[in-house]
Every structure is written in structure tokens, then in C-alpha cells.
Amino acid sequence: MMPSKRSVIGVAVLCVAAVPVGCHHPGTTHGSARHGHSSGHGGGQHGHGRDLDSYIAAMESPERAIWQKPDEVLAALELSPGERVADIGAGPGYFTLPIAKAVGPGGKVWAVDIEQKMLDHLRQRADAGDVHNIDYLLVPEDDPSLPKGSVDTIIIVDTYHHFADRPAYVAKLRAALAPGGRLVNIDFIPKPREERGFGPPLRMQLSRETVDAEMAAAGLYPKAAHTFLPEQYFVEYILEGD
Image (cartoon, rainbow, N blue to C red; front, top):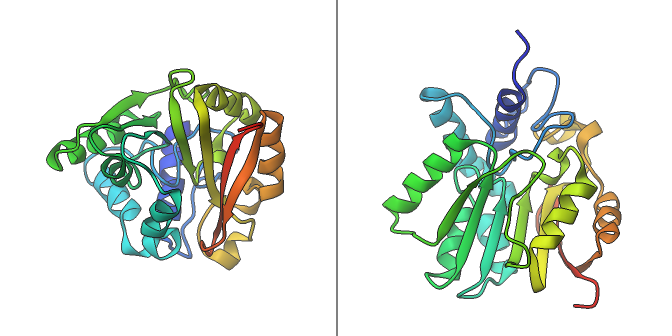
């Protein structure tokens, strides 16, 4: 039987998170040839029980931290108390929870994902950590469903290459930005999977130049680019004129 879109995404994301050299999946990637935005950062249906537990453990593994450098990423973002942040493809909360803590009780975080199981797990983790400034958004694959003009920072990690219609999706993200807001994209520097040992296949990887052009089409332009991630580009975009 053909695997569902979301189950394919889940298997593929596990390949990225666990960083195994020999991980394979049924014909797609750490996303799929066109599917939604369950991300390498989070999201994606990965069954339940031990499958889900294994997936989440892989997402939180020390091996991922070696190349994802979450502490350095958060430091570079310089989030402020009271800031409103949307985490696209939040998954089990790899970035969502530290972001929520950084913006404090006066801030707000939208955890956006297409998989209810991931959001449920994230909610449990947040409640256990006494974190109560997160809104959990279960969304369709083609719409982040964010309130217009209300988000100071939108962050997308290992997820942008999943969007089926990237220009349309970026336009919706742009509409959600508050005046002076920014969109942050972190994704893989194109490299053969055989060389890196993990991540999406080369045919799905996007150059930064491609992403810059697609952002520009929506009126978003680079404000800052951080170069400390060994496998990814990390770019902050702002609206033209900001």
C-alpha cells in the first residue's frame, strides 16, 4: 500500500534528525517531493507509541545539536521579552519551548504544525515545564493560519523546501508579519546526501539564491545572514522599507 503523505514525511524527517548515514525512505525525502510543512525541525506523522517516541527522541538527540546549534541560533535571534513568534513546523518543540521561555509570559508563540500528535506532545512538554504562552495551531498544508499583521518573528527551520507552492505560502507568511517584523529561514546548503550523510536528497534542496528570489517576490529582503551553522544557511528577512 502506498504510504500516506504524512507518514512519508515522518520517516524522512527521522532520517534528518537522527543523522544516520544509511537512512532511506520510500522514494522521497526528509519531506517529500511536494508535501506540506512537517519539518526536519518538527511535524510529520510518525505513527504512535514507540514509533512516535523514537521520532521525538531523534529530534531531540545530541547528534542533531552538533549541526543545528540551537543555543547559538537562539542567541543570534536576540528575542525580546514580549515578542510574538510563530514557529512553522513546530513538531515536538525543539525550538518552540526555548523560544517561549525567551519571550517570557508577556510574549506569545504560535506552534504551527499539520500533525496533531506532535502538537499534543508539545503541549504536554510545555505544561510540564510550566510554559503557558503557546498557542497550538493545527493547520492545513497550504496555510499557516496565522493572524494577519500580528507576528514579530516567523521562524522556519529545515522546512521551507517542503512547501508545495512556496510563493503562495510565503505571501501568507508575509501577511502575518507585524510592522517591523521579520521572517527567519534556516535550511540545508545544497550538498549530495551521500556526502552529508543526512537531510533531503539533492533534488529537493534549495540554494539560498533561490530562497532569496522567492522572498523578494513577496517583498522580503535579507537583513542579516548568519554563517556559523555548518550545514545550513540562516537568513533573516524583513519587509521592504523596514
